[in-house]
Amino acid sequence: MDNFFGFLAVAVALASLPCGYWLAKRCTKNTGGRVVLTLVFGVVILVVGVIAVIAGCSAMGGKMDMK
Image 1: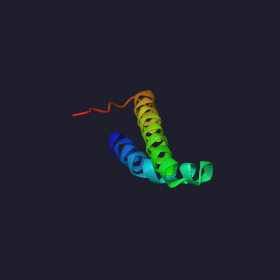
Image 2: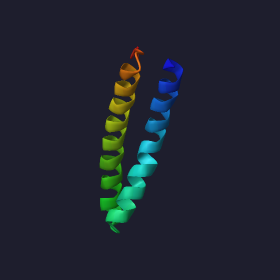
Image 3: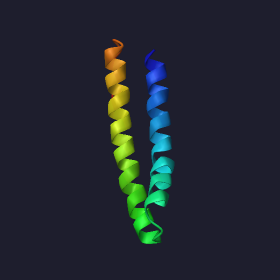
């Protein structure tokens, strides 16, 4: 089960910037603003997603060792 949550954490990390870009594209047409919003949204999605994966793993009784 720990492998599942590990793969889920990697999927969240890989999807954070494309999702951030998609949200930024919806919010602004300015290129500079789009770059900044992509980074902001990407980091927010990454942090929230990884916290959710770790919380889900802990709720299932597993341990995610950050080594």
